[in-house]
Image (tube, rainbow, N blue to C red):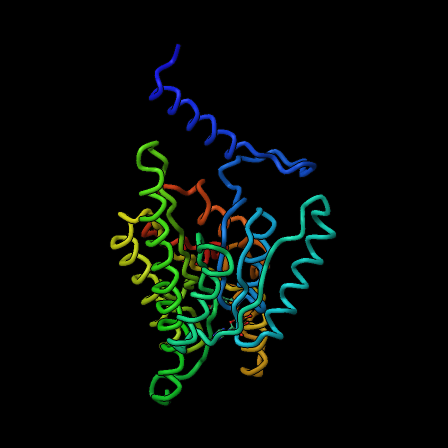
Length: 311
Ligand SMILES: NC(=O)c1ccc[n+]([C@@H]2O[C@H](COP(=O)([O-])OP(=O)(O)OC[C@H]3O[C@@H](n4cnc5c(N)ncnc54)[C@H](O)[C@@H]3O)[C@@H](O)[C@H]2O)c1
């Protein structure tokens, strides 16, 4: 005979194991269940293209549902239909992911507030946030116009912070609520995970382009992640930054076009791996960072740069 208390512990343990070991029928890939995002709601800013879209693809492939945020509904919808058609061909046994579009300029405080409120209402909470909305600008410091500088700070720093502040509020709220509900049974509280997309340029000055504004915003984002990690750890929210090296996205293609010369030849010389990254090469890192597989990772900056910053 088991006491009521020990039965409750056994049931809880069995329930947790059942949740951990759920295997999507037919997936056919043996992997550590801790990497699964099944049942999680994610929000990705700047997910209309590039690294944000790649991140959302990886989350959907790992079982998450969630929100695609970008400047226009058209770019969100195009990204979502691309993700769905990609998954139909590469993971046809999975159910179609529930990903919804939200047009929002992340520099607009009231728009960010109402968008996150809508997402939390639509999905019943927010578990994961990745801020990938960002811009780049190469200007010599002595010619850098203040308006241009402010725009850089507005999108890359203020936009990341506003999204984190709003996402964090819902994560804190659900952590407190679920903690209350499960108090007697000792459930692990529902927390959250935030990843800011920084850049290796938040750690070093890349060459030869002059980009003091960009570098400064990315360094600030790294420090913002560390600060929020210390503030929100007690709410079971992990906050980290992911700092990529050069990736062949539209942002970089646009930059190279604007520069009118192929800087990429010069860049590649300084990358030990001898090439730029493909956006899909960040899928594994970002899934790991937000998943339970990284349950003790917080306040860290993960640099993924083909070895660039190792020199
Ligand atoms: N591509 C690289 O080599 C590289 C390297 C290091 C870091 N990063 C960082 O990764 C992130 C994504 O870069 P990417 O290469 O995918 O760029 P991208 O230009 O391809 O995508 C950025 C997305 O952000 C959106 N966006 C821009 N301003 C916005 C705003 N105010 N509100 C909402 N959405 C907005 C854009 O519409 C676009 O869809 C950026 O923060 C960038 O700094 C990129």
